[in-house]
Length: 297
Image 1: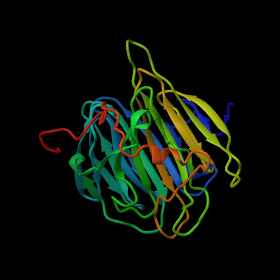
Image 2: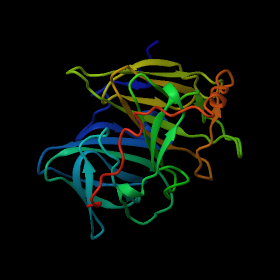
Image 3: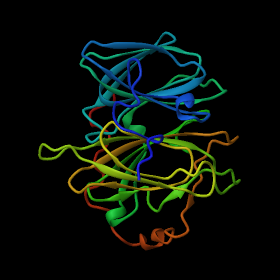
Image 4: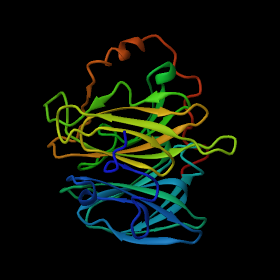
């Protein structure tokens, strides 16, 4: 099934200077945003954060971020599949300039917020890397702005790398209700990059099914590099990487809850799979990448 409202193939979410430009108005919700910016060698981009907090996250290439008389040099990475990256946090109501000597692609996950927190630089070595699941449910999660790792007002963001042939976002789970201590209501954006192999671009699949809450989002999408999927509600997962092609996705989440927390409910038909993981080995291909050696700048 195709849901053109929630699956945005590469190019469809472009606007102005951005290859992807999704804000709450475009998504039809209240908080979560994502921009992806391609810059040529020597390129720069000035922007205001407005009513949202943002993270500058290199997908490929290095950059310099200038804001409020501070300068932060991002070492970045060659691609999302080669290294964990450093990043810069920008608070709301800030003017910033992103510039690059050699060119690159940069993600700007963001969220509407009320508190104004300080600008911060985080080196790649300080990003926790989690190996989640076992066997063909194994994946790598780079928890750079997870709720319990890095302080934001509302923004939660992580990177997930799924080896070719594996399933991630599994068992299917949801976070479309406020249930104290059990589930937090969060809007979510998935942004994909797929590793090419043998000269062929890869693909993957994303499923979202109705949970009985919200608008009843129902989606089965073939996803390729540069695609985005919007998840306002519903059970999401699995995310499936085609054999031979590693899958990357950036998850951006935010919601109205007083507490910034990632609390999920597993689909009752599939939750048992977590019990099957105990004592089984993680996919030996993981981690696909780690923080680069030799410093952070």
